[in-house]
Each structure stands twice: as structure tokens, then as C-alpha cells.
Amino acid sequence: ADILNTQSFGQRIVVLDSTVSTQQDAMRLAEEGAPEGTVVLAEEQTAGRGRLGRKWYSPRGKGVWLSIVLRPTQPLAFTPQLTLLTGVAVCRAIRRLTGVEAGIKWPNDLLIHGRKVSGILLESATEDQRVRYCIAGIGIDVNLNKEDYPEELSQVGTSLKIEAGREIDRTVLIASVLEEMEQLSKLYAEQGFQPIAMLWEALSVTMNRSVRAHTGQGITVEGTAVGLDPSGALVIETDQGERIQVISGDIQL
Ligand code: BTN
Image (cartoon, rainbow, N blue to C red; front, side):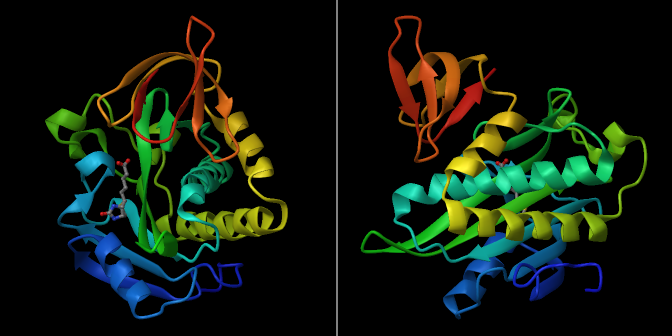
């Protein structure tokens, strides 16, 4: 804990050897009243969860698999902002520690040379339109070797070790992520989403690119990604000049 320079983020860390998903564990702690910044961390997840019902491959000892309890005060409509904030935090930590120029693909896949190195899953518990808490799940492929990837991930996934050419200390990386989370949360609390959106746009590989978005409601939109709107939605401008906001879903670059 000596290497961790934070007030709240990671001041309580539950370390598990093996678990189904740290999302579930963090949710249980949040239900029991755990404060903002409480972290659950596991060496291995047996059923790690990704966005859109996907699985998240979480092999033992090779990555950072953690979940953070967040207690936002804004309405549910603002939670996409927290997803983007978390992506910025992880991206900055990776860059700072490894020197590798990871970029953010909307909403928050972190890519290096077009391959995914990290993913973020933000889940919210609500009650009458009010957010009770959010769980920010962060998965980072840290020390996986090429041969550690199963067939279906070998072309799309990469690790920090593969990209940086050296082992990365997971403890130091976790401390950097939690420090960035705390700093950005403070900035967000004091100045709102605007400065976070600017950081996100600067780190993003999505901006000004031609994209195809699948919104999850079965709708496909094609156009150019032109920025974030104040709620954190991605704004896509179609060839007809129409601007469409995408709140959730997936994009292809
Ligand atoms: C995605 O890119 O689809 C999001 C992946 C999120 C993975 C992390 S690993 C820690 C936490 N626990 C989970 O089960 N999922 C998140």
C-alpha cells in the first residue's frame, strides 16, 4: 500500500485468488455499504464478463482483473461519462507506465496497434431512476504471451508485455490506475464532464474516423465520429450531414 498515493481509491482492496467475476463481488460489497473507491481484485476469474453479454478471458496471474465501487450523485443518464472517465484513467496509466501509446476506441476499448489490450464494463444499480452505485470493471491484459491467447482472441487481442517487450509489474499498474481514477474523479467533481471529454477526445482513436455503429437496438448508423456530446454519447455525422448520438453499442472503425 506504500506505492499507492490516493485518499479513497484502493484504500480498501479485497484480493481474491480465484472468483467467478469481481463485478459480482464488488456489487455485494456495495450492497453492504462499501464506500466509493473500494476495490475487488482477483488473480483469476472463472467467468469474467465483458460488455454486451460477452465473456472476458481472465487467465491466472496474467492480467489486472478488478472492479471499483463508485457512488455517483448524478442521475442515471450521466453514467456513460463515468465509463469514459474510467477509460481515460486506464489509458493514461498504461501510457505513463509502459510508454506504449494505447488509444481509446469508443466507448472504452483500449487498443494498441489496432488490437485490444483492455476493456471496461460499467454496471449500475438503480432505484426509482436514482443511481444507488456503479461498479467499474477493468480488465487489462498485462503479461500474457502470444501463446496464452485462445484461437479466437489471437488476432484481436494483445498484452502490454507483447507491446512493450517486457514484463509489467501488475501492482505498480494497479496503483497508477487507481491514482488516475482518483485524480480524474476529483477533476470531474470540481469541473464537470467537459475536461474529461477533452482528455478522452485527445486519447481517442475514434475521433474524426469513419465508423459504423451498432446501437444494440438493432440499428446501424454510418458516418464520421465528430465528438462527444455533454452526456458522453458519441456524435456521428452521416454523409447527409445529420448528427446522431450513440449512447451504447459497438463501433467498427
Ligand atoms: C469489455 O471490453 O467487454 C469489458 C471487459 C471488462 C472485464 C473486467 S475484468 C474485471 C471485471 N470483472 C468482470 O467480470 N469483468 C470486468
